[in-house]
Length: 363
Image 1 (cartoon, helix red, strand yellow):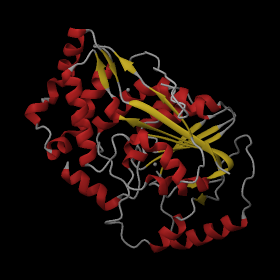
Image 2 (cartoon, one colour):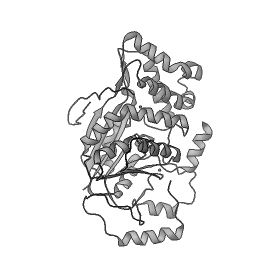
Image 3 (cartoon, one colour):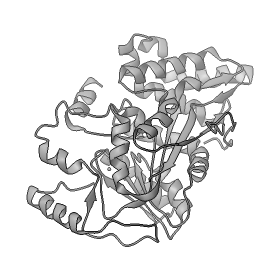
C-alpha cells in the first residue's frame, strides 16, 4: 500500500472522488436556512499546445445554454491550466490529491457497490440542484460512472455528459456500465484535475466524493468553473462519515465508522467534507450556495454491510498506520458477516454516511 501511495504522490496532480443493492429510498429532513433535505487523453506536444492556445483565444465564449453540439477538434482548458503546463517541470511533490482508497480491481468493485447504494440519493440531489433536460454536463472524478449515468438520464438524449477521472482502469468500468445500461449520451475521458480540456463550455459542473481527497478543494473548484458558461450550474456532493450509525446502536458499526474516519485522516482526506461543502463553494466564488442532504439506509442483509466492510478493507493499511486498530482487531475477512449478524440481532437499521449536496449559479 505504501508503494501505491508513493506512486500517487509522484505522478498525480488531482483526483475524485476519484469520487453501492438495497432499494430503500433516501431519508430526508429540512432544518434552518441550510435547506437540509435529509479521466484516456493524449498529452499534447509543446507546439500543439501553443496552437491550441491561439485557437482558444480566437474562439468566442458560449454565452447561453443550448442543445448538445458535436465534439470539435479544438479544445479549451480551465483557466490556469496553461500556466501550470508551461511552468511545471517536475510532478514530484506537487500532488494536490490524496486518494486513500487505492487503485485496485477490488476498489473498482467497491465503487460500483457504493454507486448502487447512493444512486437514488445522487439523482434526487442532482435534480434538486437544478440539473435539467438538454444540459451539457461535466462530471469530475467520475469513478465507475454512477454520477455520470444519473446525470445522463436526467439530461436525456438532447443533453450530453462527459465524465473525467485520473484512473484509466475505473474508466473502463464506467464505459462498460454505460454500455450495459444502454446510455449513449455519456462519454468518459482521462484527465488529472484540474487540467481538464473540453471542446466548449458546459451548462453544469458536477462531482461526487472528490473534494474530500483534494489538498485545496476551493482552488480546484474555482479553476474548474472556468469550464462552465456564465449562469451555469455548479454542484458537488460529499459525505459526512461521522454521521453513519446503526439504530438501535451496534458497537461494531460504531467501531467501523471510527476506523474509516481514522484511515481517511491518516491519508490527509476530510471524512466530513460534506459539512465544509458550502464554505468551499463560497470560497470558489459562488455567493450563496443552497444545501441538501440525503441518507441511504440498509438492513442486516443489505449491501450496506458490504460497503462498510469493503471500505474498511480498502483503508486497512492506513487504519493500521493511524494506530486505532490492527489487522487482528479488524479481521476484515469476517467483518461483513459479523456486521450483518450484529445488526440482525437487534434488528438495526444502518444509516450510511449522509450525502450532502451544495450548489449555486455562476454570475
